[in-house]
Image (cartoon, rainbow, N blue to C red):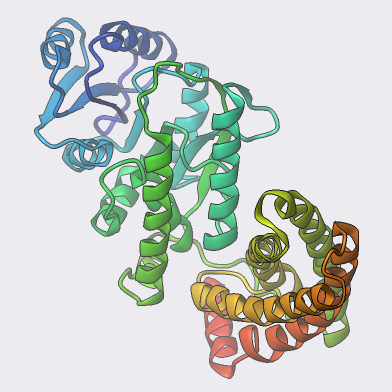
Length: 408
């Protein structure tokens, strides 16, 4: 191993809670790989968050036996607590963490770290959802993971593809700037960190990974999903209220825009809106046919409209009206939901009228009526999006122009 100049280059945190069964094998494997493959200085820290089994004694033994391995213990349970404590105390230039089961192939570690050491990127994450990623896991976990990341993209307007892969790294200066605003200390910790990093204009580098599911994982998927949704709502509310100084972080660490995209002409907006509307209509029809059976016509209509409305607002914001960046993002999503309620009122009224005339109307007839009502709702949606949700404000134009001038 060659020591890099200027101090410790990399510290990898391995958060653990009652992992005595696999801890020793995993740390030996990780340390062996780092010794063979990395040409810069590194350190492994076992971050124990209140284990009650033999994890503590095994960790101390490993720290005594293996060079560059240390042990920290917290008496508070929570992966976020462990990462926050270890990262805050670290003197390394790049901070990383891996799951103790080493589900991610360690061959992805050098490309994970390289863009951070070079200064090209601010945060680096492994993704199990990339086209070239190779993943072995059950269909239930696959469905939950993809659904969660789709929800995250639709509601928070983020571009990273996999928020929950336990294989991430961040530059130390970025971590120290963001950590005071990350409030979760459990499984939502790294998702929250990623959201704040992207909303602050920081660069997130993704690499596809090979990943094998740990069949002995003790993560409560249902409770984790509930906590994650609560976390999304909390973060959205904090950003809307201005509790997180995203613009200040952006000015300190972020990159200015290359250019300010011009707003499409009215005709261009109509064409782009039509393209988004066509895809939304197809998505709505498929979702309605999926939900109509188990939930009924009205509930199926509501769920299908709600899911397509979130995606529709996000697509129109970026594609139709060419609005980028965090400014007014969540306000516009809420306004988009108001527009959704208008559309839902139109389509649900059409269903009520159909059932009043034909009480036993077939799903095909319901779909025809709903599609026709959606055409009217789409026209109203375009007008509301253009003159209310995404209207151009002089203050916004001045701010974008000023940002462009500062970047040059």
